[in-house]
Every structure is written in structure tokens, then in C-alpha cells.
Length: 454
Ligand code: SF4
Image (cartoon, rainbow, N blue to C red):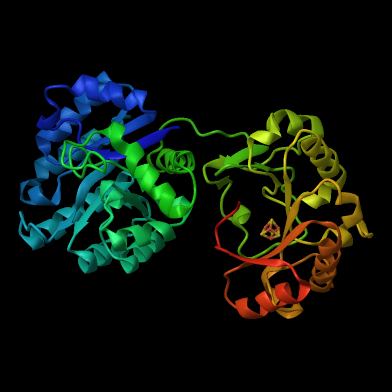
């Protein structure tokens, strides 16, 4: 498992007695990088010093809203100078704190705007602290023209998270998500799209359960990741992978894999990415928005052979199921699907196919009897209650695609042991009518979230 702690304060005095050991423990716990955040002039200096001593430590320079009154022109110029350093990956911690009001509010707002201007000027992301200051935070961010940054240790409401994400910011989740009483936060964590999620410790503060009450440190990030994973119905490894990718992309640190993956794990299933071609161009398709799904790069430069897929699978019995899915319509490559699925079944694996239901149109014959002994289950994207809505949402290459999907469902029911229809929650889709279609065909039904593959 790998993680990036996107917000900690390694220079603080709480770590004076064992700083090196604490940083070693972070490395041992799988932390690929630590972003230690400056909050006043001296802490910026100390944080920079730590980046010289540890190759995987990066920093962000800024003056915390508590100390906004100290942001003189000289200090601002010093921050600007530090942003040229290659280990400085962001501007902040800045923002507004109306809970403590340690600096007058108008001075906090002025300092916040100056930090945002610096972030814009340098192209660096901004690290934002906001406590009891939702309206002013959002309004200053909206008029700043900033589109890259993070609301750290998120403690706002759902509307604040949604508006911040619309601006382009990430939402970073810290230890309080492990507190059972943090009901609103735990609810918000379920709805943040994968691409916007970050994780942090804010160490030495906000220690997660089961260490609550003690000093926090980056190696405890796994407890926060575990709580997020449970809430989102994925594994801790999935959360580590996708938040690490998000942090690398936001802060420009570490290497990002450029090669598309042909076999990728989500939860306990293995997914096969065998083509990026598709006979639909759905308005909600994630492959038009990103190359990545849950931290896996799915953009192929070429389609894998059966042998390459089999090698990439390894032991199929090690997974709950092996799913033909990926960034495209797998049944375009029917012969590859048949060959690999047969091998998976011969080696005690379970096979599922996620399809758009166009295979009989593509191959101009009923292909379902050919899959009969190789496939355990099939998820067919219905995606609309009628042909008109389907045309509008899915932009199929075939004239009569919706009828083709309906016919495919009936044939699938005859030849595949378990069939379910899936529908994306999109505007214009009548979920009740889609469910009726599934019921009358005698197959299962599942509603998919807009940005979810797998
Ligand atoms: S059918 Fe699936 S892969 Fe094809 S465009 Fe639609 S969402 Fe994307």
C-alpha cells in the first residue's frame, strides 16, 4: 500500500524528541511522500530544512490565518522567493479561521487574497484552511480565478464541498473521519468523486482512532484510509492508490505511470482492460474525462493479446471474479474474450462481462450461445428507459441500438447464469421505468454512480 500525507507539520516542537524516527516510521508505513506545511515564517524555514534532509519530504509555504497579521510585504516577498525552490509544491497554509479569530477578519481576508494571487502567479496549488468561514472562503476563492488546490482537513458541509469541487479544488480528509460521531463528514466522504479526494494527517493534530488522544504522526494515515475505504465500499489499498495519484498530480511530485494497465484490481476483483474502443459515446463516460480509474491508468496505446492478458491475470482463483470491463466495449474483441474467459474457467476463476449490449449488432449474429460455458455473470448497461433517451445519452453508432440492447438482454437471460442491468444516474433517466424493464426481463438491476467504473 502506498500513501501521500498531503498535510502535516513535521517541524513542530511535538516532534523534537523523535523527529527522525517518526519520519522513518512514515516510510516503513508505505508513505511515498510527506507534504509538511509551513504556517508562520519560522515554520516555513524549518519545513524547508526538512525537505533538504529527507528526499520524500516536500513543503508548502504560507502564513496561517491565525498569523495573518504578520504577513508583511517583506514576508510575502520571502514566500515568493521560496516558491522557486523545487521542493516547494504549494502555497499555504492560508485561508480563514473565524472560530479562533486570532487575526482580525479583514486582515485574514487580505492575507488570503495575497496567497491566492501568489499561487496564481506561480502556478502552484493553494492549501486552504477554512473554519466557520464558509461564505467568505467560497466567495474569495470564486473570484480569485484559482482552480488548483485543496480544502485541507475538510470540516464544512456538503454544499461547501460541492462548491469547492466546482471551482476545481480537492477535498482532503483527516483523522476526524474515524470518529463515529462525525456523521456529516462521514456522509460527505461517501460522495466525493475519486478524482477530488485527498488524505492527510494534519499531524501532530487530529489523531485518528485507535490512537485518539495521543500525538498524531504520518504513519497513522492508514487508519484514516481504512475508515474512508469502509465508507466508500472499497479497500484501503484502493484509497491509498487513488489518493496517491491525486496528490502526485496536484503537487507535481513523484512518478505517474504512463503505461495503460491491462489488468487492475479494485476491491477483491480483477478487471481486464482489453480495448478502448466503444460503439457508444456516452455523455457520462469517464474515459472522456480522465485516463485514470481508482488510480489505475486505463489509456491503452495498443490492445493486449490473449497471452498478455493471461500472464497479467496470474492466478484467477485469487480473485472474487475476473471482469472484462475497462475503458471500452470488451465484446468488440469477442474471440479474445472467449479465449481468456475459457482459460479463467479452466483455472478455477469466475468470469463477469460488463458490456453495452451491442455485441449482436457488432458481430451481426447472436453471440450469446458462444459465451454460455465461459461466463458466470454479465452486467449490461441499459442506461435509458426508451430509444429516444438512449440516443440522446449514449450517442450509439447504430441506428437501432436501444432495440439491439433489449434483444441482447433477452438472449443473455437464456445463456448466462446471472444477468443484471445497470443504469447511470443521469439527467433524463427514469430509474423506475428502467427497473421495470429489468423486472419484466427477469434480470437483476443496479444503479451506478456517474463517475464509477468497476
Ligand atoms: S458504453 Fe461504457 S465505455 Fe462505451 S461510451 Fe458508454 S460508458 Fe463509455
